[in-house]
Amino acid sequence: MQVDLDGKVAFVAGSTSGIGKAVALKLARNQADIVLNGRNSAQAEEVIKEIGQIGRNVIFEKADITNYREVAQAMQNAVAKLGKVDILVASGGINKTGIRPTFFHETDPIDYLSIAKNQWWSRLYCIKAILAHMIKRKTGKIVMVTTDAGRWPTPAESVVGGAAAAVMLGTKVLAQELARWQIRINTVSTTVIKDSASLQYVSRSSPSLAHVFTRAFEKQPFPTTVEDVAEACLFLASPEAHGITGQVLSVNGGLSF
View 1 (cartoon, rainbow, N blue to C red):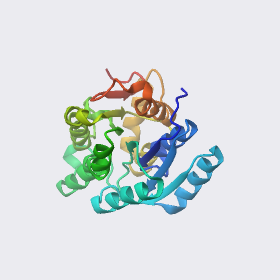
View 2: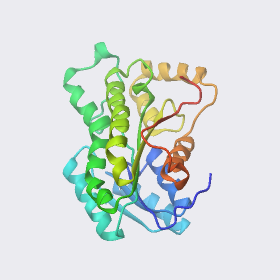
View 3: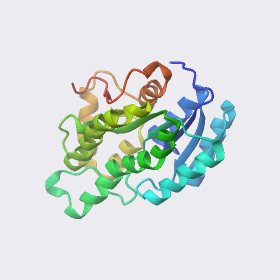
View 4: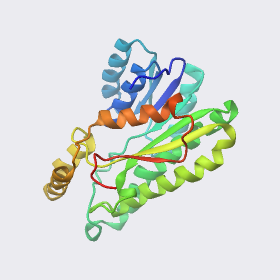
Protein backbone atom coordinates (compact mmCIF):
# COMPACT_ATOMS: atom_id res chain seq x y z
CA MET A 1 0.00 0.00 0.00
CA GLN A 2 1.24 3.48 -0.91
CA VAL A 3 -0.33 6.63 0.53
CA ASP A 4 0.67 10.28 0.66
CA LEU A 5 1.76 11.38 4.14
CA ASP A 6 4.02 14.15 2.89
CA GLY A 7 4.01 17.02 5.37
CA LYS A 8 2.78 14.82 8.22
CA VAL A 9 4.67 14.18 11.45
CA ALA A 10 4.15 10.82 13.17
CA PHE A 11 5.08 10.02 16.77
CA VAL A 12 5.51 6.24 17.04
CA ALA A 13 5.77 5.03 20.63
CA GLY A 14 7.90 1.96 21.24
CA SER A 15 9.52 2.23 17.83
CA THR A 16 13.12 1.15 18.38
CA SER A 17 12.26 -2.51 17.67
CA GLY A 18 9.48 -4.91 16.77
CA ILE A 19 6.09 -3.73 15.57
CA GLY A 20 6.79 -0.10 16.42
CA LYS A 21 9.95 -0.08 14.33
CA ALA A 22 8.09 -1.63 11.39
CA VAL A 23 5.37 1.01 11.68
CA ALA A 24 7.89 3.87 11.82
CA LEU A 25 9.67 2.61 8.71
CA LYS A 26 6.37 2.06 6.90
CA LEU A 27 5.19 5.61 7.64
CA ALA A 28 8.56 7.04 6.60
CA ARG A 29 8.42 5.16 3.29
CA ASN A 30 5.10 6.93 2.72
CA GLN A 31 6.68 10.38 3.18
CA ALA A 32 5.95 11.04 6.87
CA ASP A 33 8.54 12.59 9.17
CA ILE A 34 9.09 10.45 12.25
CA VAL A 35 9.50 10.87 15.99
CA LEU A 36 10.99 7.66 17.31
CA ASN A 37 10.43 6.71 20.92
CA GLY A 38 11.77 4.06 23.24
CA ARG A 39 14.12 3.39 26.14
CA ASN A 40 17.10 2.12 24.15
CA SER A 41 19.15 4.89 22.52
CA ALA A 42 21.49 2.40 20.81
CA GLN A 43 18.61 0.66 19.07
CA ALA A 44 17.19 4.05 18.10
CA GLU A 45 20.40 4.96 16.28
CA GLU A 46 19.97 2.00 13.97
CA VAL A 47 16.40 2.99 13.09
CA ILE A 48 17.43 6.64 12.62
CA LYS A 49 19.98 5.52 10.01
CA GLU A 50 17.37 3.48 8.16
CA ILE A 51 14.88 6.35 8.08
CA GLY A 52 17.61 8.78 7.09
CA GLN A 53 18.37 6.60 4.07
CA ILE A 54 14.70 6.89 3.11
CA GLY A 55 15.14 10.66 3.08
CA ARG A 56 12.73 11.68 5.84
CA ASN A 57 13.30 13.85 8.89
CA VAL A 58 13.63 11.79 12.07
CA ILE A 59 14.32 12.52 15.72
CA PHE A 60 14.45 10.31 18.80
CA GLU A 61 12.72 11.13 22.07
CA LYS A 62 13.73 8.79 24.86
CA ALA A 63 10.86 8.05 27.23
CA ASP A 64 9.32 5.18 29.15
CA ILE A 65 5.68 5.18 28.01
CA THR A 66 4.59 3.77 31.38
CA ASN A 67 5.75 7.06 32.94
CA TYR A 68 3.39 9.92 32.06
CA ARG A 69 5.86 12.71 32.86
CA GLU A 70 8.44 11.22 30.49
CA VAL A 71 5.87 10.78 27.71
CA ALA A 72 4.54 14.33 28.14
CA GLN A 73 8.07 15.73 27.94
CA ALA A 74 8.81 13.67 24.83
CA MET A 75 5.66 14.97 23.12
CA GLN A 76 6.50 18.53 24.09
CA ASN A 77 10.00 18.12 22.67
CA ALA A 78 8.66 16.63 19.44
CA VAL A 79 6.29 19.54 18.85
CA ALA A 80 9.03 22.05 19.65
CA LYS A 81 11.50 20.42 17.22
CA LEU A 82 9.20 19.49 14.33
CA GLY A 83 6.39 22.00 14.81
CA LYS A 84 3.52 19.53 15.20
CA VAL A 85 2.40 15.94 15.56
CA ASP A 86 -0.30 14.79 13.13
CA ILE A 87 -0.23 11.06 13.80
CA LEU A 88 0.23 9.10 17.02
CA VAL A 89 0.84 5.36 16.96
CA ALA A 90 0.82 4.00 20.51
CA SER A 91 2.74 0.73 20.32
CA GLY A 92 5.27 -0.97 22.60
CA GLY A 93 4.54 -3.58 25.18
CA ILE A 94 7.39 -5.80 26.36
CA ASN A 95 7.34 -5.26 30.07
CA LYS A 96 10.67 -3.98 31.35
CA THR A 97 10.06 -5.75 34.68
CA GLY A 98 10.18 -9.12 32.93
CA ILE A 99 6.50 -9.96 33.41
CA ARG A 100 5.33 -12.36 30.71
CA PRO A 101 1.99 -13.97 29.76
CA THR A 102 1.08 -16.33 32.60
CA PHE A 103 -1.84 -18.58 33.40
CA PHE A 104 -4.03 -16.79 35.93
CA HIS A 105 -3.52 -19.30 38.73
CA GLU A 106 0.23 -18.69 38.40
CA THR A 107 0.04 -14.89 38.16
CA ASP A 108 1.25 -12.99 41.21
CA PRO A 109 -1.33 -10.32 42.16
CA ILE A 110 1.55 -7.89 42.65
CA ASP A 111 2.00 -7.97 38.86
CA TYR A 112 -1.54 -6.85 37.98
CA LEU A 113 -0.72 -3.16 38.21
CA SER A 114 2.45 -3.46 36.12
CA ILE A 115 0.54 -5.30 33.39
CA ALA A 116 -2.15 -2.61 33.35
CA LYS A 117 0.43 0.17 33.13
CA ASN A 118 2.34 -1.60 30.37
CA GLN A 119 -0.59 -2.67 28.20
CA TRP A 120 -3.29 -0.07 28.95
CA TRP A 121 -2.15 3.04 30.79
CA SER A 122 0.84 3.47 28.46
CA ARG A 123 -1.61 4.00 25.58
CA LEU A 124 -3.67 6.47 27.58
CA TYR A 125 -0.52 8.35 28.61
CA CYS A 126 0.53 8.77 24.97
CA ILE A 127 -2.91 10.05 23.96
CA LYS A 128 -3.23 12.41 26.91
CA ALA A 129 0.24 13.83 26.28
CA ILE A 130 -0.58 14.94 22.71
CA LEU A 131 -4.32 15.53 22.99
CA ALA A 132 -4.29 19.25 23.81
CA HIS A 133 -2.06 19.84 20.77
CA MET A 134 -4.40 17.93 18.46
CA ILE A 135 -7.49 19.62 19.90
CA LYS A 136 -5.94 23.03 19.34
CA ARG A 137 -5.17 22.15 15.71
CA LYS A 138 -8.55 20.38 15.27
CA THR A 139 -6.97 17.42 13.54
CA GLY A 140 -5.22 14.16 14.35
CA LYS A 141 -5.00 10.44 13.70
CA ILE A 142 -4.43 8.09 16.64
CA VAL A 143 -3.75 4.37 16.28
CA MET A 144 -3.28 2.10 19.28
CA VAL A 145 -1.75 -1.37 19.04
CA THR A 146 -2.83 -4.07 21.46
CA THR A 147 -3.38 -7.81 21.75
CA ASP A 148 -6.29 -9.75 20.27
CA ALA A 149 -6.74 -11.26 23.73
CA GLY A 150 -8.94 -8.24 24.40
CA ARG A 151 -11.57 -9.62 22.01
CA TRP A 152 -10.90 -13.37 22.03
CA PRO A 153 -10.32 -15.56 25.12
CA THR A 154 -6.64 -16.45 25.08
CA PRO A 155 -4.94 -18.83 27.55
CA ALA A 156 -2.27 -17.19 29.73
CA GLU A 157 -3.53 -13.70 28.88
CA SER A 158 -6.43 -13.15 31.26
CA VAL A 159 -4.95 -10.02 32.84
CA VAL A 160 -3.28 -8.81 29.64
CA GLY A 161 -6.52 -9.48 27.78
CA GLY A 162 -8.47 -7.46 30.32
CA ALA A 163 -6.15 -4.51 29.74
CA ALA A 164 -6.52 -4.92 25.96
CA ALA A 165 -10.31 -5.01 26.29
CA ALA A 166 -10.10 -1.70 28.14
CA VAL A 167 -8.06 -0.28 25.26
CA MET A 168 -10.70 -1.45 22.79
CA LEU A 169 -13.66 0.01 24.67
CA GLY A 170 -11.66 3.19 25.25
CA THR A 171 -11.17 3.43 21.48
CA LYS A 172 -14.93 3.62 20.96
CA VAL A 173 -15.54 6.10 23.77
CA LEU A 174 -12.69 8.39 22.72
CA ALA A 175 -13.86 8.26 19.11
CA GLN A 176 -17.16 9.77 20.23
CA GLU A 177 -15.53 12.34 22.48
CA LEU A 178 -12.88 13.49 20.00
CA ALA A 179 -14.90 13.61 16.79
CA ARG A 180 -15.89 17.24 17.44
CA TRP A 181 -12.22 18.18 16.92
CA GLN A 182 -11.80 16.04 13.80
CA ILE A 183 -9.58 13.59 15.68
CA ARG A 184 -9.92 9.96 14.62
CA ILE A 185 -8.85 7.05 16.81
CA ASN A 186 -8.69 3.33 15.99
CA THR A 187 -6.96 0.24 17.35
CA VAL A 188 -5.07 -2.60 15.67
CA SER A 189 -5.09 -5.88 17.59
CA THR A 190 -2.67 -8.73 16.97
CA THR A 191 -2.25 -12.40 17.78
CA VAL A 192 0.80 -14.57 17.15
CA ILE A 193 3.36 -12.88 14.91
CA LYS A 194 6.37 -14.96 13.95
CA ASP A 195 8.92 -12.15 13.81
CA SER A 196 7.70 -10.15 16.81
CA ALA A 197 9.98 -9.29 19.72
CA SER A 198 7.27 -10.23 22.23
CA LEU A 199 7.03 -13.78 20.88
CA GLN A 200 10.80 -14.18 21.03
CA TYR A 201 10.74 -12.94 24.63
CA VAL A 202 8.00 -15.40 25.64
CA SER A 203 9.71 -18.30 23.87
CA ARG A 204 12.95 -17.67 25.76
CA SER A 205 11.32 -17.22 29.14
CA SER A 206 8.77 -20.04 29.20
CA PRO A 207 8.94 -23.35 27.30
CA SER A 208 5.36 -24.20 28.29
CA LEU A 209 4.04 -20.95 26.87
CA ALA A 210 6.19 -21.37 23.78
CA HIS A 211 4.29 -24.62 23.21
CA VAL A 212 0.96 -22.77 23.46
CA PHE A 213 2.07 -20.27 20.83
CA THR A 214 3.42 -23.04 18.59
CA ARG A 215 -0.03 -24.64 18.61
CA ALA A 216 -1.55 -21.27 17.73
CA PHE A 217 0.76 -21.01 14.72
CA GLU A 218 -0.39 -24.44 13.58
CA LYS A 219 -4.02 -23.27 13.65
CA GLN A 220 -3.36 -19.96 11.90
CA PRO A 221 -4.35 -20.20 8.20
CA PHE A 222 -2.38 -17.13 7.13
CA PRO A 223 0.82 -16.48 9.13
CA THR A 224 1.23 -12.79 9.94
CA THR A 225 4.32 -10.62 10.28
CA VAL A 226 5.11 -7.22 11.75
CA GLU A 227 4.79 -5.88 8.20
CA ASP A 228 1.12 -6.89 8.15
CA VAL A 229 0.53 -4.95 11.36
CA ALA A 230 2.46 -1.97 9.99
CA GLU A 231 0.29 -1.96 6.85
CA ALA A 232 -2.85 -1.85 8.99
CA CYS A 233 -1.47 1.06 11.01
CA LEU A 234 -0.47 2.87 7.82
CA PHE A 235 -4.00 2.56 6.43
CA LEU A 236 -5.65 3.88 9.61
CA ALA A 237 -3.17 6.79 9.73
CA SER A 238 -3.77 7.70 6.09
CA PRO A 239 -6.27 10.02 4.36
CA GLU A 240 -7.84 6.86 2.90
CA ALA A 241 -9.22 6.10 6.39
CA HIS A 242 -10.78 9.51 7.07
CA GLY A 243 -14.20 7.88 7.36
CA ILE A 244 -13.10 5.35 9.98
CA THR A 245 -13.01 5.97 13.73
CA GLY A 246 -13.73 4.00 16.89
CA GLN A 247 -12.89 0.67 15.24
CA VAL A 248 -10.75 -2.34 16.16
CA LEU A 249 -8.98 -3.99 13.22
CA SER A 250 -7.80 -7.49 14.09
CA VAL A 251 -4.70 -8.67 12.22
CA ASN A 252 -4.75 -12.32 13.21
CA GLY A 253 -4.28 -14.35 10.03
CA GLY A 254 -7.64 -16.06 10.45
CA LEU A 255 -6.82 -17.44 13.90
CA SER A 256 -9.95 -15.99 15.54
CA PHE A 257 -13.23 -14.45 14.44
